[in-house]
Amino acid sequence: TTKDKELRNLAKGLFLHDYLNAEEMDGLVDLIAAPTGQPAHLTPSSVDKFKRLPVFETLTGQRVPLEGGGGNNVGGEFFMLEDGRRTGGGGGGGLLDAGSGVSLPPSARSRFLKLPSAEDGSSGGALSSSSSSNRDPQRVSDLYRDLGVARLSEAGVVMRFLLPNFEAEMDPNAQAALLGFIRENWDSLKRASRAEAGDDAAAGAGAGGREVDDDGNSTNPFVVRLKTVAFVPVKGVLTRADKLLDPSNELLALIFGGDGDDDDADGAFPPPDFSET
Image (cartoon, rainbow, N blue to C red; front, top):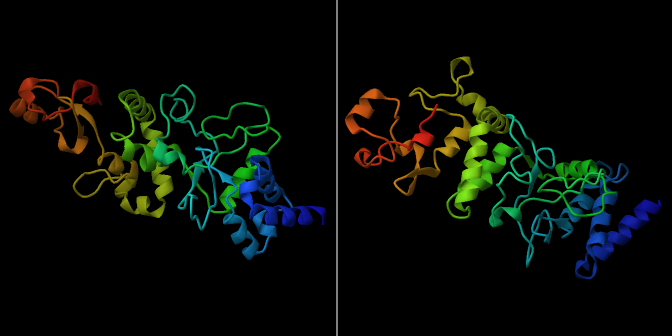
């Protein structure tokens, strides 16, 4: 067919990708994303070849292969947000929406694929492409899913990319914005992390679905991950929450006195902003 011939010609040309422009690269992606060209209609070897072509654009603007990266290409696992742009939830705005104050650190931007803008011409948020609005974002998103690109919820983005870089790559304003987002969306982030973890999280839930172990410690994946991050400012030093004492415990408060900002507390408790329930 005409489309098959066009696909073959484009595929041949993409081996000389240094001479092709972004529009031509997007053309191949759109062609295969079309109903007659999706991976289900291609042979396994054709799908493998397609995944090795450096035609997939990341947030950094780099064109990468999904598999077999070499030379200047980025190898490794790639992601997109759960609905392509944002997931919202908890009554707050989307994690990476404009104005949220939160952005992916440089080390993470090369791991997220851009999607076309919606046909209504909206910006589509941080994970949208600047390409022409006549591209179909849903088809491209479905194609990426079929090619094995993982969809991350906002909980997944926070756990995989933001918390590990909290101190190293985020300035104080971004840190405060992320912590504010976590507090506003605490319940939905825990639910999403449990859903992404699947059977492992279900196995960690106690009687009645309570996510605690025999010692009363939370087994929720989001909570467990957050415990490993130094994010509580105590006397000018970012400290892990599990290294501090519970200020609601009257006996501990009597023994140590004060809070995280009190000179007499010896850094044993979190500051007031982190002591609220």
